[in-house]
Amino acid sequence: MKVRAGGLVAAAAVVVVLVTVGSAAARSSACGTVTINEQAWAGSTANTYVVKNVLEKNLGCHVNITKVAEVPVYQAMADGKTDAILEDWGHQPQWDQYVTKQKTVVRAGANGVKGVIGWYIPTYLMKQHPEFKTWKGLKGKETLFKSPESGSQGMFLGGDPSYQQKDQTLIKALGLNLKFVSVGAEPAQVARWTQLYKQKKPVLFYWYDPQYLNATYQVSRIQLPKRFKGCLDDEKLGGDPKKYACEYPSYTLLKFMSKKFASSGSPAVGVVKRFSWSNADQNAVAKMIAGDHMNPDQAAQKWISANKAKVNKWLGK
View 1 (cartoon, helix red, strand yellow):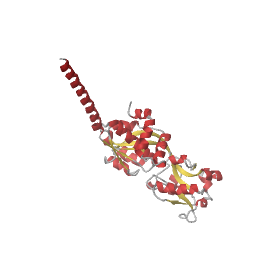
View 2: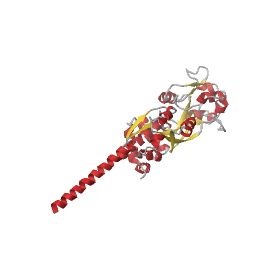
View 3: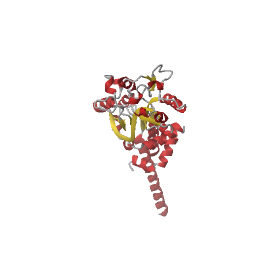
View 4: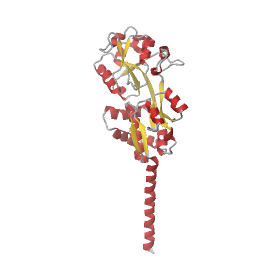
C-alpha cells in the first residue's frame, strides 16, 4: 500500500507539473506575436525595447519590431501590420481619420512622457545674445547663422523630414531672412548641429525634449509667438502661412493600438495600456542605447532589473 500510495503521490506530482507546464504554454500561446513600431528617434527605441523585453520575459510573447514613419504607421495599424505605437507626438489628422472616423485604431493612454518641440540654439549663443530669447530678437541678425547652403540668408536647420514640422511656413509667416535647410534623417541633423556646437559657432535648429543629448549639449529654446485658436502645426496641410505663426504645442505623448490587437484578448494589450514612465526613465535608456552604444535588449534588461516596481505595475501586479 505504501508503494501504491507513493506511486499515487508521484503521479499527482506529474499531473501538477504537467498542469503547470501547460499553463505556461497557454500563456505563451495566448500572447502569440506582438508587433510594435519603433519610430526614428532614440526615445522611441527605448520605449519599444523595454516593452518588448517585458512582454517576452514575463508573458512569453514573440515581439516583432517594425520601423514605419510617424504618419504611415497609422495605415499600418489599420491594416493590422503593426499592433502598437508607444509614442505619438500629436498627429491630429491621423487621429481624426483612423481613430474617430474609421475606428481601425484605438487610443491606449499616455506613456508618461511630456514632449516639447521648438527652435533651439546653443546656450553659449543665448548668453552672448540674450535678445534671442524670443524670435523677434532674430530679426536683422539672421545672417549670423549663414552656412554654405543658405547663401546670403541665415540657415535654419530642419529636423528629420519624416517628423511633423511647420518651420518653412513659420519662417515665411514671421518674415525672417532664413533659409530652411534639411540634411536628412535625425542622425545627419544631429551630426551637423553638434559639429557646429563643438566649434562654438552659431546654429539655429529644430529640436525637442525629451532627448538624451540634451544632457550632453546645453541648448536653449527660443520663444515663438504664443498659440492662438486655430493655430496649425503640420505645414503639409497647406493654407494661409499666418495660421502657422505660433509656437509648437507641448505634447502629452500618447500610445495607440490597432483595433484588431486591442480586441484580440492578448495579455500584451494590458501591458501596453499600463506602460508609463518618466522623461528621465526614457532618457536613461535612450542614452545607454544611442549614447553608450549598448545593445537595445541589454539596455532594456538593465533598466528593467533596476525598476521592478514600475514593471510590476505594467504587468498588473
